[in-house]
Image 1 (cartoon, rainbow, N blue to C red):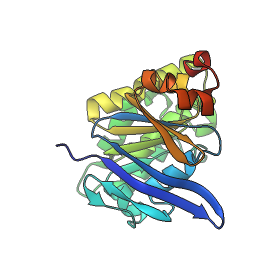
Image 2 (image 1 turned 90 degrees about the vertical axis):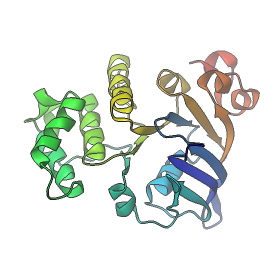
Image 3 (image 1 turned 135 degrees about the vertical axis):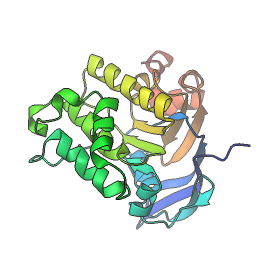
Image 4 (image 1 turned 120 degrees about the vertical axis):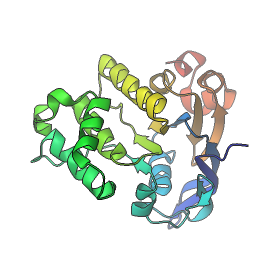
Length: 245
C-alpha cells in the first residue's frame, strides 16, 4: 500500500469558544491533485494554516509521507518539501520577477547547487521568462500568481498547497494557470492540494474533492460524485444545476 503524501486524522481547531474545524480526516496520495471546497467560514483557510504548520491544531494529527509532523514548525515542513501559496499574493514589489524567485531559491537549496540554474528552471516551468526583468507592478495578476507559485516550488517541493490561486482571474487566465499547475503535477510529480470555493473552477483540474461545511468534512469523492451528493447540494450548492457550475 502506498504511503499517503498527507494524512489528516481528527483535525480540530478552536479559537476560544469558536470551533473552526472539527474531526477533519482525509488523505492525499502522492501525485494526486485534490481540491478542498466549501463556503466562506467552512474552515478552508484554517485547514491550510494547520497543514502548512503556521497554526497548531487543537486536536488530531498530521502525517507527511508517513512521518508525524503535527508539531513540526512551518520552516522545517517547507524544507521537507511541503510548500504553499497565500490568498493574497506576497511578492517583494521592489524586486524583479527573477529576483523574487531567486530569493526563494537561495533560501531553500543547498549551497553546492547552482541557484541561477534553478531560477531559470522555475521561470521556464511557469513560462515567465518574458516577465523575468519586470517588477510585480508591471505584470498581470495572473503572472503575479505564477510568481507566487514559483517562489513556493523553488528548490524542493513535494506537496504544493494552493490557497485560492485562481481567484480574481478571467476564465482564459484561470484556464492557462490550471494548465501550468497540471504540468507541474505531471512533469515534476508534485502533489497538489487546491482550496477554492467554486466547484466549477476545480472540476476541470482535480481528481478528487473534499467538501467542508460547518467546520467538518461532509463529502469526499470525484467531482461528479460530489456534484450529485445530496448533502452537498442541500448544504452548500443549493441546486443540482449549480452543483455543476
